[in-house]
Every structure is written in C-alpha cells, then in structure tokens.
Image (cartoon, helix red, strand yellow):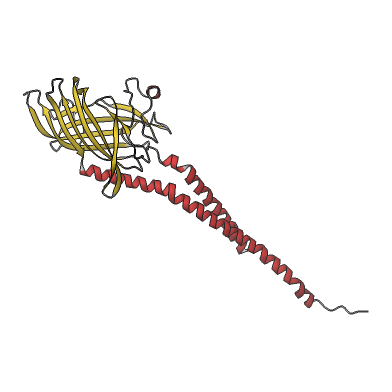
Length: 319
C-alpha cells in the first residue's frame, strides 16, 4: 500500500515538474526578457566643460554634473510597448544634490524639455512614427533606433542609436569586448562630425560628438559611457566643449543591477527548465516503477496463498 501511494505521489510531482520545465523553457524567456514597467532610474555623469559665459563673452572652465532620469509611464505602456518620460540637465557641479536645477539658477548650463518616447520592450527599438503618434501625446518627438538601452541578447553587430541633439539615429559601431568589475560587456562607439543642430537653447550652430558605451549583452543595459561634445556657433566659436562619463558609483550600481537581472533570467530560463525536465522525468520513471512493483507484489502474494491453503485444509475421507 505504501509503495502504491509513493508511486502516485512521484507521478504527480514528476508531471508538475515536467510541465513547469516546459513552461520555463518555451514561455518564460519572452516574459522575463522585457523592459520592466516599474522602471524609474536616475543616471549621473560627471566631467569638465568649457562654456561661453554670456555675461563676459569669455569661455570658462567648470566641473559639471549631468543628470538623466528615465521614468516609465505605466498608463500608456502594455505587454509589448513601454513608454518613457525622460528629463536631462547639465549643471555646474558645486556639490549640490544630483537633481535638475531651476532654469534661472546660474549653475544651469542646459535643461532639456521632457522627452516622451516609446520602445519595444524586448528589442529596445523605438516605435515607428505612425505607431508612436497613436500612443504618445501630440507634441512627442518621433524617435528612431535605440534610445536608453540595447536589445536583450545584444548581438556583436552595429546598432542605430538615437542622438537627441541631432534628432536622428546615428550608427553605434560594435568595437569589441571588455570587462567592467568582472562583468563581460560589449563596446560600441558613435561619432558625429560637425553637423548643423540647435546646440544651446534655441541657438543654431554646429555639433560634433564622440561617444563610447559599454553594454551588458545579456540584458542590453548600458553599464558605462564616455562622451565628448563640441558645440559651436556657425562661425566656429565655442559655445560648449564637454567631457562626460558615468560616475564610479553609477557604474558600480549598473553592474550590480545587471548581475541581479542576469541571475533572475538564468534561474527562470536555465535552472528551472533543467530541474523541471530532468527531475520530472526521473520522478515519472520512479513512479511507474513503484506502481509496477506494487502490482507485482500483490500478484506474488495471491499466487503463494494456494499451496499454503491446500496444506492447511482438512483431509477428506474417501468412501
């Protein structure tokens, strides 16, 4: 009886594990490899700038801090699309809290208007203009290419990366592999050479940029970034010459976040399928063997009862 109960328990548990393994193998990757809808992140970059002082007409140097906040608008996001509201600003760094300052503060170098955009939750690609127009406010600027992250399972291939100052995507060239704090990353570079743009406020001028980003290929997260920008008047006079990179604390936080995400992805897409499929198959075989053994035991006990019964029966006297 005990063997029979254990057999049914093993069959039930084995079937459950087998189904769980199949679900994790076939369905879970499409669920866990998506941009979370609770994202609300602030990214800090620090560096130096040479900027034109409008009051004196001189180009002056300063330590600077750039703040970029990306927040998901969950009301217009869904299973496939995530909408973001992004705010960025560049301030003279005098040890203040890392937040965008008011526009009339003399430490403000540049504050951008809120940028609203939508991307595919799996690939990170911006929605086509027609699709974004149906989803986003009427004054939202259509984007193209990648904006704030790379695809899950990023390939070793060139990507198109949005440049907000140009208002178009530029080629992010795959440039090799690196390692940051033990995390394997891919390196991508972009370059803009003396292009016309609205460079500061509403001033039209020329814009050049060189940027390097290091990406965790498993999650598509940007782990580190270095950039150099030159913004000039049409005549070539310097308005802003900027060198920026993620702060050390920001890089450490990005690495830790990526490792946590990788751990979750690996557990759901690798560990659970292996445990489910292998463990489920083993338990199913064990359950069948236990039930077979239980039936065989009953047959042997029934068969052996005949001779014993014959020996114990009283003799019948012949007439």
